[in-house]
Image: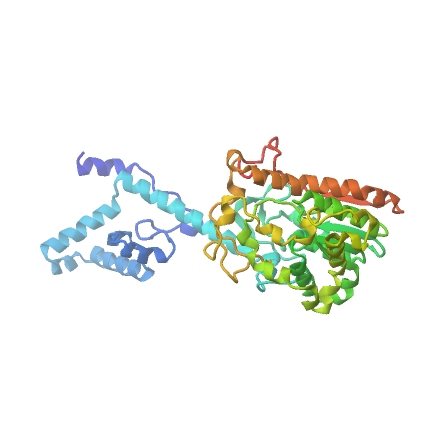
Length: 460
């Protein structure tokens, strides 16, 4: 096809539509990719036309073309080959081929999408929750209530997000929460500091070393309740609670137990121990759950502290571990007295209590043998002071047929069997507790619930 025919067809193609952010002449404006791309292109030996042009480059080009258009005698200063090259390139830019128009339209759309994403990321990063989370490597979770201006304009996203709670699309960013629409954000923010008088009440919270379980236990303690906490790593949990500014006031009502919920006999023993030891029970919060399985190497850095003698710990941390130590002594020497329900218990039956931390090092999947600093780099922790996990694939991204059977069993033991046992064995104590306000809270997830239309085939 001749050049003249191709050019006439290209004139019929409409220039790409641009938003206000890109409302400039497409012939003299280059879409703005990341600035590092130009250096990368040159490193790969890409042609100069693919390198990003600076604003000065564009300004020089426009000035030269404007001068030539005003006085074509400037062309006489060029030799024949240079003049022909200049005019040919100017013609190709002003009258692009069809495929060039298509490619340019894609480039503008891509640049507009990236600009919208960058704009939205900046707005979301300015929410108070994210600012507080970035304030330090680890911040105690009793965050100061920020002052919010009720009349301040709320920034608007260019692309809609789905609210984490109600799933409705929203563009107005909440002042505090980064993933909630305004109604859900306002409701949750109002609940953030809500409390009640729980003096004299007793609660059991599983999986309360980090994140939601930790927050829930703190909230109960600050409301005046006595709280029994379970975790596989009780010494680390004690260290975390000791970092709270009001720990001196809370520690008299806190007891931390080491318990691996995957070990069902230990769960039975623990429930029977509580049934005899606690004077009453008002709340059971089954918070512990397994979503993404962590291999043995993920917990390796915690083992040294967990194996240390109790006497080597500071007195304030020792005080919240005394009952766990007593229970372990009873299990190790059953004939030496202790709770009568545990008189016949053996070390094997209580392994998930006595050795709750070391049980995490048992290896029975391939991931357990892929340890080392390459996947779990030493002394690198996230904002919750948990080990950084650099695995490219974990169970969050696996499909039904890719999940190993041992992991399936672990999930059910932690998420379903252990809560069932605790609820069943502790129910008589709760029934005997005076008062009407008693609660069992089973934290649930969508694992295994295939009837949900929003559930993907990942992480079954």
